[in-house]
Amino acid sequence: DIQITQSPSTLSASVGDRVTITCRTSQRISSYLNWYQYKPGKAPKPLIYSAVSLQSGVPSRFRGSGAGTEFTLTITTVQPEDSATYYCQQSYSLPWAFGQGTKVEIK
Amino acid sequence: EVQLVESGGDLVQPGGSLRLSCAASGLSVSVNYMTWVRQAPGKGLEWVSVLYSGGSAYYAESVEGRFTISRDDSKNTLSLQMNGLTGEDTAVYYCAKVGDGYSFDFWGQGTLVTVSS
Image 1 (cartoon, one colour):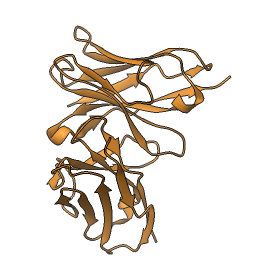
Image 2: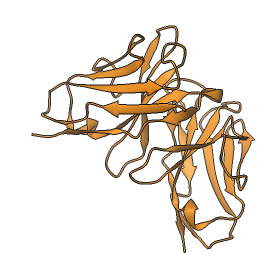
Image 3: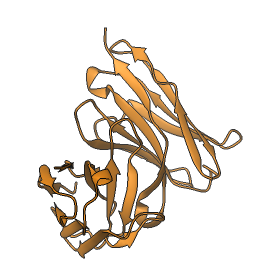
């Protein structure tokens, strides 16, 4: 099974800051890496698919990059509504798996 | 507009069974890959199972042999039959459609399963 290491587990940022979250996989997964935003009481919201492609309706301040074993989600200018937990997910091979999550707090 | 609505969550005793349903509109479950994901209290997201459009089904090791995913094309509904439930199965269960890059591009609001005596 493919293992995912997501970091950091939590981060605190001010409005307008650039935020970066990283996922590393235990084996190469090409670009089969997706990102989601989760807020308590709501359904997870898909942000990025195939490492770099923005899901429909997602603001352009969310950017995905990477390939192989290292991937990054960047929020270029973080907004108050971006306070949430972010998860990466590998879809290269079954069992599909999520990272441990990164809680983003806005100061 | 795509909508997925889960139902069937409940309080069940350890060792018991439960069947979750996911009613779909705006998409056909028969031609899409459909999946279940869960989130236990205070924990992260966990992939549970997927049903391919061709009928093949796959499971996480934690539920293999206890859970069964299926669909009813006439009702456009996805289901998850859960047997041998334990406290570790307590979670909010979400159904989702698998889209580009095998990402989960549409999600339901979830249904809560609590396993406790």
